[in-house]
Image: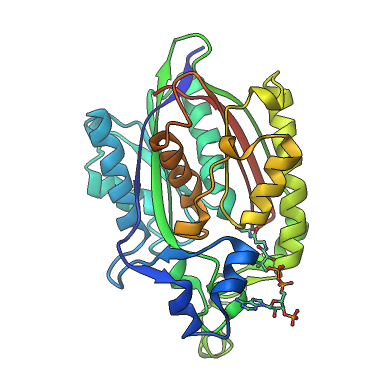
Length: 329
Ligand code: UT7
């Protein structure tokens, strides 16, 4: 059976930056509160003409160029996003067309902050099944389009960004994908959602007047669940892999809150040098956080060929995702 390896990656954040000081002028908040409660200093915001498929395309283009791969060689494109350009066609179709990836099929994955890890799990198993050689997994979100910039409890948290991993088949023993542990718990659905715009509450004058097309979050409920599940999912996937926490060279967690990340690392007994934190620069970019943090890990020399890397995340749904890979680049 072939295995899947990560053979390239690419990231894109739009150039516009929104600082805590900018937010102080928009809502009743302050830099000290945001920094101490979340760890965020700045986040990138897309220009009005840019949508998630544009961010996804840029990340994909960089990823494929680094590998020198013609987009026509792709077998599938999976786009993880909670902010598609529109309900349909899927963002995967938009990106496929723009790349000229005429040999690929694909679809969008909706699992909020866990969707990139779910994309890795699905992509790896398409390759392991023997039917696919090259799968592009993209996480792209333009969260600024669904944030209520009058709601201080949510608008300070998120930013826009995208990242792509190229997965390819490998026959090298011990290389690439190792294990996954993913869970969903729909009983948590009320804690983090965008209420309107779907078939339950279609867009109407009333839904717009009631500001129901924005992210609504019960922060503390999500926080408590995330702290518990980030640890549990990490330990579960480490066990499935037949490893110990100390075997994990780098923990690449979803970047939702610095306090959640630090609690997870501490519970796993991983020192600060083995955990990637870049929430200060980008905020929570939903499906973009894990590829963006992976880029930082590689650029900082913390993630090298042969290392075991643990990706772990918790998001709306609730959704929980954990993957272990052996880094191949
Ligand atoms: O990626 C998807 C998953 N999402 C997450 O994992 C997010 C999980 N949750 C969190 O990260 C945290 O719960 C938040 C950062 C969202 C909030 O932090 P918290 O420590 O849980 O604060 P809180 O909601 O309990 O609010 C504490 C106080 C409240 O004031 P009172 O009632 O104590 O007077 C809030 O009104 O802080 C107030 N507050 C703010 N103050 C200044 C809430 N937002 C702000 C703000 N600036 N932006």
